[in-house]
Length: 82
Image 1 (cartoon, rainbow, N blue to C red):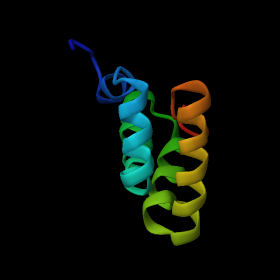
Image 2: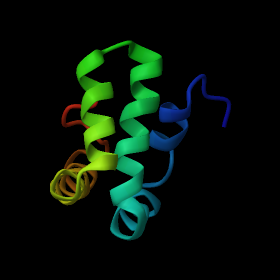
Image 3: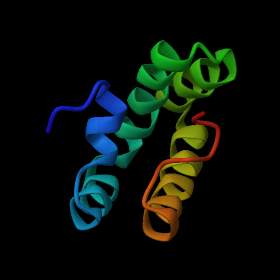
């Protein structure tokens, strides 16, 4: 895989792998994905949401559910990650 970014490498994974990662590690992956996405796009909202997902418990749980649903439906973490 010769992708230019870490998020593109994650997005290139097979759907079943990403869904399994979200099931077991989604609480951490969502925050880290958004922080790395900020470094690539410079969208401050993405950074703030990424930090909140990693730091807050309820935000972490909500983001985990939302990310799991978006991975299943659209094959990409897309909510507040652009």
